[in-house]
Every structure is written in C-alpha cells, then in structure tokens.
Length: 376
Image 1 (tube, helix red, strand yellow):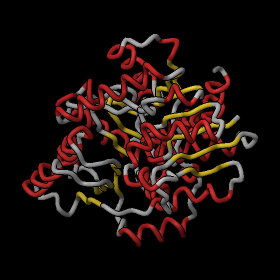
Image 2: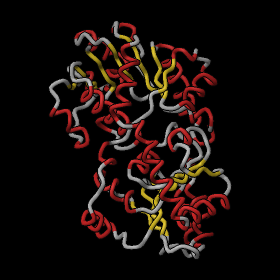
Image 3: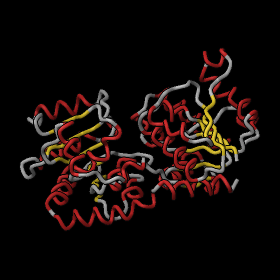
Image 4: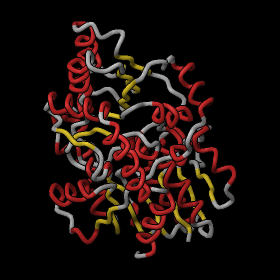
C-alpha cells in the first residue's frame, strides 16, 4: 500500500501532536516495511527527532513544488495537496492532527483522521471564541469526510459521539505510544550525569506538561505546600510557561517555596527518560486531556503515577496508579504522602504499572493501526 500522512506536525511541533506523529510514522514504517509511506509537509525542515526517515527506504517526503504553493503553504496543505496524492497513487491518507484536506474526495484515497480530543467543546472557557469556532468546524468536517476516525482514547470516542453525533461504528480507538527510549533503563553513572546536569541532587517528585490553567499545576503546588514539612523531596516541574504561570509563581513566592519548587524549561528530549527514572513519583494533575502521554512515559520508566480521575487518565494509568479529584487538594496531599512513605505500595505501583503499560508498546499500537487501514 501507499500510505500518506499529514506530516506538518511531525516536522514542526516538538510536543504533543508532534510526538504523536513522529511516533506513529516511526512505528508503522518499522513494523510494516512492505508499504511505502509518504510524508506531506509544507516546508522542508531539519528536525533531528525525525532523522529516522533517512534510514528508511520506504519513506518519502513531499513538499510543495510550485512557488505559489510555497508562498501559501496552508492553501497547499488544505487544497492543492490532493493533486500530489493522486500523482503518488496514495491508497490511504491519514490526517494525524484532527484535520483533512478540504477537497480530499478528489484524491480517490481512503481517508483516516485522528481526533485527539474535543477539549475546546468540553471546556470552552480555556479557549478564545474564534479558536473554538474554527476548531469546531474543522474537526467536524474532518469527522464527516473520513472513512474512519481514530480516537486516541475511549473518552475521545465518546466525546465525538456526544458532540458531533457520529456513528460509533465509524470510530476506532487506537491508543498512543511513546518514544521507545522510555523503555531503556539507565545505568547508575548515566543517572549521576543527569543529576549533575540539571542540579537534581535532592529527592524529588516530578510533573511534566505545559504550564497552563488546564494542566492544573497550581493545585499540585498547593498540595506540595501542605506536605513539604513531612517529606525531604523537592517538586520539579518541566514545561513551557504561559501567562498562567504568574499565578503559580505568586503562590510559590507567598509561601516561601522558592527553594523547594523548581521549574526547568529546557530539557533535552534524550534526558527525559532518566529524569523520570530518578524521580520518586510523577504527578499529573491535569483537568482533562485526550490521553496523557506523560503518564505512560512514567510507567515505562518504572515511576509511580498520581493523576486525576478525569477523562481518559484511568485508561492511560491503569488500575494501579492513584487517582484523585482534580479539585481536592487534601486528597492529592494524602496520595503524595502515601506513595512516598509506603514502600510496599510504591513497589506494587511500579511493578503493576510496568506490566499494564506494555499494551502501549509501539508494536501493539502499530498492529492496531494497521488493522484499521486494512479494514477500509
């Protein structure tokens, strides 16, 4: 088969949608080398995280050929791309980030779209009006035009049915995977190097994710303030800051937590697995996500997870992670104390979490994805 992907995010996005796109392309092309894979991106870009394409003879990259299309890349990606799909004899075109070309019918390819979440509909207060309106139309049209919709969780599937009234038989759940480097257990000297590189000399609990209101970091910092005198750990936060961070900073300053809460903005991707491994727990207090990749990254790294009982998180974390009400600071406080002081509980969470997360290995996810393709 000739399989085409909307690869803009794979080349240009270094976080959520980019990680999803790169991981999927890497896995499917490796597990099913008999197919030819075409990556459509409006600009050439040297992204070191996608250098694996240079090693694969079954991957080809396509950029706009005409000068006008380079000047108007969005037009090429939304309209003109269908001419290239026909030229490449694409059997299946997969939009990896919630959208399909507007005239995709012209390509004669089977159409698949991944819908990651509908947070803008479930929590509209987190999104500007114009963004909500644009997303609503774009996502709905993609769902209607697709032959198959891939939801990255049962929660997302249910939201598609609820908000867009799409027939459930049109939607398949295919979970995400994470980069295989999270399965590599670091040696003691490698852990020491990372501790020295980032100044992680003390014990710590970890939180990973963009520092925005929906991620609910302020609740975690408030819970940490309640437990700080009972544990030797620092709180280490890795994530990009937004305006919301000012509220978090204000609380940190008012409660004298400057020496106990650390925010690390720039972490090399290859260092993430080791940081997870040297953390005593990973806490993900988000209100809602389509899936929650940091959860499975932590489980692969054999780090116990505390997260909220919202949305898809029980799907990602499994039965042995600890779930709390996202608005209940005291419940989160208790969970932190229990995980850090009860060695038997902590080891059970590590062992059972690692067993549970094996279903998200890239071989299994690729098999599930190929089953969707072959059903068309």
